[in-house]
Amino acid sequence: MHAPRLNTVPAPAAKPGTEPRPLILALRALAALVILWHHFASYPPLSAWAAPLLGPALEWLAAHARATQVFFVVGGYVMALSMAHRDWRLPTALGRYTLQRYLRLGLPYLAAMALVCLAYLYGEDWLPEEVAGTPVNLPQLLAHLFFLQAILGYEQLSAGFWFVCINFQLSLVYALTLWLRDGPARGRWNVPLILGTLLAALALFHTNLEASWDSWWLYFFPYFFMGVVIHHAVHHARSPWVFVLYALLFVAAMAFEWRWRLSSALLVGALLWHAEWRGWGARWPRQPLLLGLGKIAYSLFLAHFPVLVFVAALWTRMGFNSPEMAAAGLAFAFAGSLALAHFFHRWIEQPAATLARRLHRPAAAHGAAGYETPLWQGR
Image (cartoon, rainbow, N blue to C red; front, top):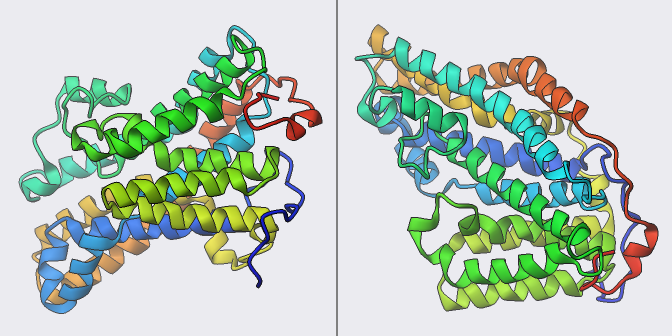
């Protein structure tokens, strides 16, 4: 396939709110699998017991299998696709969206929190401290309830919970920029793009270099904003230059100080931009198993760690500590995670999403003329 010319007209965009593209589902599926195996390889005792048999593979997974940037970039794009066309002038828009987002993310997250606490209870006095951590206390639970555990200095109850907290922060910040666009700016300025570019530049050259910021949205904002930029380039500006200029900002940041997370986010962003620009992301891939896994990716992300904890406790109690049995335990935990994720998606995530949608009051979308305005203008 030839590289697109910079003046090429993009493929027709799908309407906001339509079924996610196959490529987006595939990226979600692969990211969830990578994160699952990173956690399986990082937490003892199964990984330690299996090391004589699977040592090199587990070491590589623990050191290099990172994919949260995929979720951030794809999440930014999907969020912009579903939110940018809405009218945010209603006084209750932000409050309604906050509750809607909490139901969508928070209810499955709270269910996963209950599962992991039960797993810790089952493995009490059997699991190493790296897995079980310190005993759970009420302030820690309350901090988790409001996505504040990292900010307040409490230990995470489950691997990956930090991502849900950051995702919630990013969604509120993006909604705030949309409200500023439609409210105070009265649609004359594209506040999400202008303010977002300034914030991304600040993060790339300052906050993303400081680990002390990794409990806050601004540390991860450049990855998320990559998806927002792709949405604007394809669906509003209809020009690749918006994406190209933002990609050059990433290149400059990597030249300033190398960070592999920036390179992975840039690669995912380039793939997603080309897929949406050319339209092939709506047609490929078509593997049913991969696409099905993409639909339950969030449930798999939440459910796999409680399963790992439970299987590790069970194997410890049973004395299954040989390399072969530990490898079998990892395989069993993987199969159990997939099974629980299907159940979790059907009975927890989908009802939570349905409940969140009931709070969505249809708002007037921006007119088609908004796609033809200069990139600094709002609509």
